[in-house]
Length: 112
Image: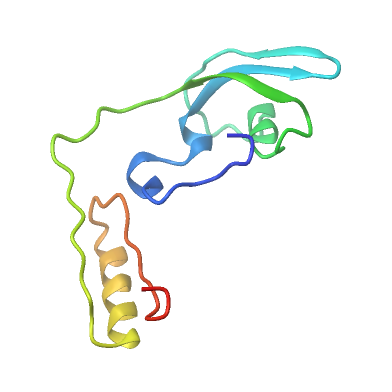
């Protein structure tokens, strides 16, 4: 969490800064309790600094996360398109369609 990393399915399940509701940080100056609170867009907050600190400000020892139920069914369809240009065009069309997808991944032929 302190690396502010993002997983492959973060488009569907959320990024850690949106899921993090509160927690406990052990810092050189003492313990910092960040009580759970509703999500807010009211500007910068200490939580955001902690989540990107990679442990420089203290060690996150406890976390409270917002969770959602897993879907009843989860599928991972795979498509192989004939060339890179069509692949990119298809990926862009999916993004513009704003479908409720958890992940879209476009890979180069070398990566595949």
